[in-house]
Image (cartoon, rainbow, N blue to C red):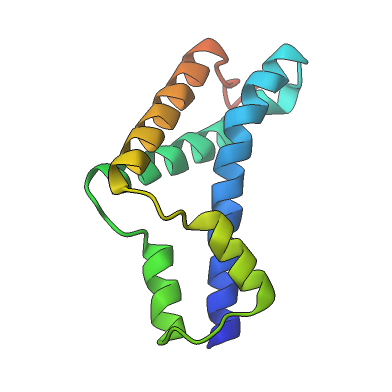
Length: 124
C-alpha cells in the first residue's frame, strides 16, 4: 500500500504545485501577453481548487487526499525517498492560523486576478 500512498502524495503535491504556479504565472502571463493564462477552464479549475483549500482551512477540515494517504499507509513506517521529500514540501509544521491566513490571502489574490485579468469566454 505504500506505493499507492506515494501516488496519492504525488497527486496531492501536483495539485499544490498547480495552485502555487498559477498564483505566479497568471500575473506573469498578463505582463508577457501569454494567451493560455486566459483559458477559462484552466482558470475555473485553478480558482476552484484554491477556494476549496481555503474553505478546508477556515473550517478546519482535513484534506481528503491527506486522509486517504494516511489510511493507505496504516502506519508510520519509513516512506520512500521521494515520498519523504514530497511530504516535507507539502506538510509544514506551522499553526493552523498561519494556513487559514495564507489560504484566504491566496484566495483573495485569485479573485483579484480573475477580475483584473479575466479569462476568455468559452467561445473565444
